[in-house]
Image 1 (cartoon, rainbow, N blue to C red):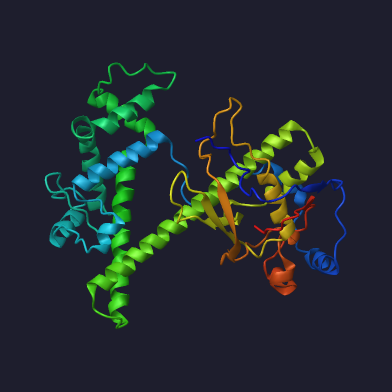
Image 2: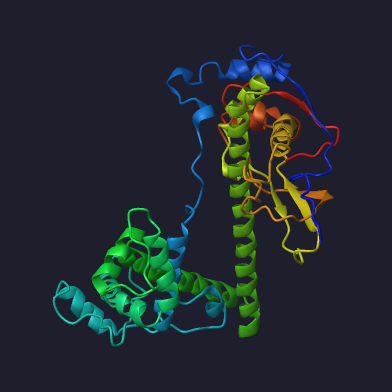
Length: 407
């Protein structure tokens, strides 16, 4: 079947009209704008010492994006810890998996001897789940597991290990992998050091498991303490629902991050082209004040497959000025799904998108300290905006949508 890539991401928005605003001047302000300008006169910092927002790419919230080699290393470590019964995923917590603790007297003895006697063993590794990850027992266990990790890679995790080695040896400074043979233990150790700190990753994953169980224990106490029932099955459903909600939230956050990066890339490409320079310079300056969390999100958790249209229900942020939303939609219309060689960019699957116009509003709160004209005064009210400590207004290009949809 031949697929034609649809306009991205809002195929049904009609052509936009641009009106360039001269860069040195600000547009006419309403009375509210003038009042706010006077209120901010003594509070706005001198912009001369601030970095030009056009040069700013805001760091993405939460974790950074991992490379393929880093993802492989993390996957291998999870497999290794699972074999040792030390990595427990969230779904197992909901099923009531019980943790194995070391004898408290052994932990106390090791602690009083300053780590010089007794301690954890590889034959029966036990993490002190009720202790912080920096506790001497847990640090010692992480070191033992790290020393044993190479042997696991060479004997049990060979498929992923070979892939990891191939990625490492594709570095131009290294020799290509010969016959897909595993390296010696010292060479493997050197490769792992190039990819990530194995001991630190192990310790962080063990601590993450401990935190998941602590949260589950709190949920159980609260659940049974409220007298909502004593059914373990009901509690399992509750925890599973929370896990599902977290997955949905994480996925929506990833889409916001992807949208932020994509829009930044589009703006950079258009600025370099030099066409409609004044408009794109204004857009670049305005976009520099935004972060990935300011992007809109959508709900597509019910999509069915490759050949089905992707139904998108927008979750618009009502606190954002519609003029800013129109600017962002205009940026989206300049997205090119293909590289210079003609191949589809990563993540650009040729799926049709159907926008559901019964959009729901996002519950996200307005982010403070944005330019004053980034806020929707009509819905928020002037007094509310004043509490957000807004900055001086910036010039926004006048972009009109014949089909109005807010971000």
